Length: 213
Image (cartoon, rainbow, N blue to C red; front, side, top):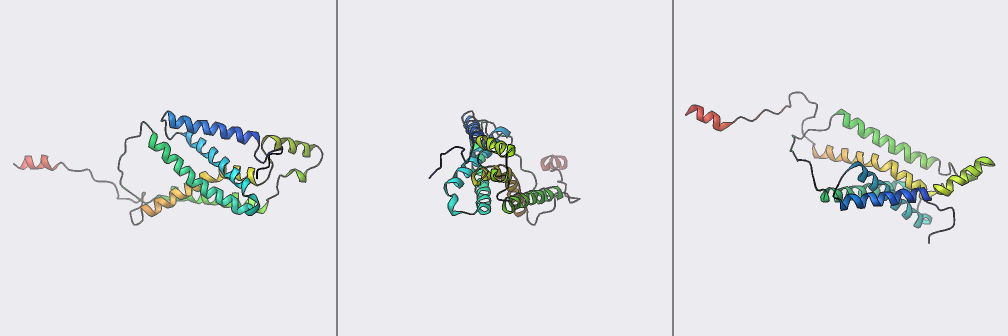
């Protein structure tokens, strides 16, 4: 059962951001703008609120660190589905070309390492410092300031932590998953930066035949 006593676990600012994200996603679908930076950010904000609200409902039966990792994983899947929906309704799609497949270069592997490291640090901090920032640690002016922050952002507890954990963690997890998918897709192919892998231009066979005739 939801606790509607004030301050809320998810404050007015995240709720307002979710309303804006919902409108942005609705507008992208109705106008058929499809996948844009604004629509992707809208998807991320909407998914973060859905994850935080779910964590508030099932809070008594799950661990904080486990809840955050589950929310990041499920949120990434939801983001992929929403982006696929936006792509399917997009009115103008870029011309599709079929480039030659190559294994990811060093830059992409380095990016995957950065995404993985960011996830480990983010989830590790939430695991090691579950009570950091709670108003019970402050006194006097700082306690009043912390209480005022909770009125707008939400109680520094599981739901609002899940919200910001998804906003920060899902892009990193999405980049890591896309990199892994690219590695599996191009397994056994030459590297992208391998020398001597340039494509040879096609020769017009009909022109050569006419010359011999």
